[in-house]
Amino acid sequence: MPDEIPITSPCEAAIPVKPIEWLGDRVRIIDQTKLPQKEVYLELSTYRQVARAIKDMLVRGAPSIGVAAAYGIALGGMGIKTKGSDIFQKRLDEVIAEVVSTRPTARNLFYVAERMRRVADTGGNTEQVKKALIEEAVKIQAEEEAATAEISRLGAELIKRGSGVITHCNTGPLAATGYGTALGVIIYAWQHGKSPRIFATETRPRCQGAKLTAWELQKAGVPFTLITDSMAGYVMKRGGIGAVITGADRIAANGDTANKIGTYALAVLAKAHKIPFYIAAPASTIDACIETGEDIPIEERDPEEVTGISGVRIAPEGVCALNPAFDVTPHELISAIITEKGIIREPYGEGIRGMY
Image 1 (cartoon, rainbow, N blue to C red):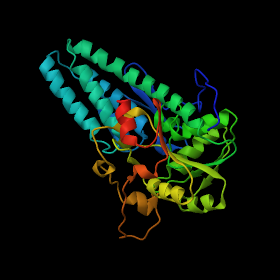
Image 2 (tube, rainbow, N blue to C red):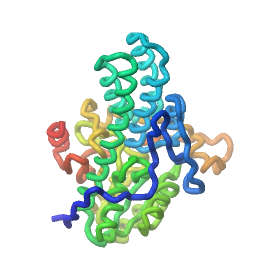
Image 3 (cartoon, rainbow, N blue to C red):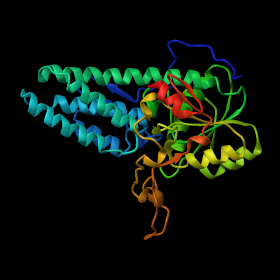
Image 4 (cartoon, one colour):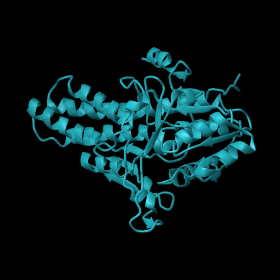
């Protein structure tokens, strides 16, 4: 049986930073591309600015993308200068389409767009709809924050006291606006006396682990060791690793999971070393309309992210590079999926259907 973790309510903040904040007529974000060298905050007042921030990964992480998108759609609605309901709805559709076109893999983006569309369809005059869109966006952020706090609490029960834990990419408050998903589990376990030995992968090609996870763990005062992606097998083979835990960008109805490129390799290594491999993600990441991981769209990004690091070229000119942002881990390699609604195990299809 896993060690039980006491419930802390409300959950203490994982780090003293609010990565996304609604200011009434604009949204304030921390520019994640500037971390860890600088903490730069930007105030975005149009939906196009928000869409660009998502596309260029100033905001990233599936839950955070969803929250930012909600505020972007609300800002888009605020900017429509017509009192005609039909014209307003048409222009809002154009806003939503532009926002959702930014990142194709993250389910939260589309989930949020569907919610905001339903709010707009409830009727009322344009001013009432604009107000309702803002209220829904604020509600979405509050729900995501509450969800990640519960995910962190539930997931921490699976972490063995004093064991090693490997995590990949960035899944803390920056990625989730709230406590965090996979990294939230780890930070919560540390704050509640389980003292896990934490190994964070660098996460090439954009190095979110080295830049963002390392920054968050330092902010939280949690000791850890940074490793290159290719060191994970070596660390597992040395022994003492009790779990590998990552986040997710989209989970299919059968439990197949899309996450940052390199996650599948970690799952295969964990299986070979008989180490539990966990996914931590809010229910909003589950796409029950997609049957298997084969149907999850995989974003292809600029090859220059592979041929260089932070704008500095490391490969010779003319080199071709492959740059899928995500890969898919088959459900049979996953030991459990941790959501705010509970921990799901095989058969995942049954557990996911029960959740809905």
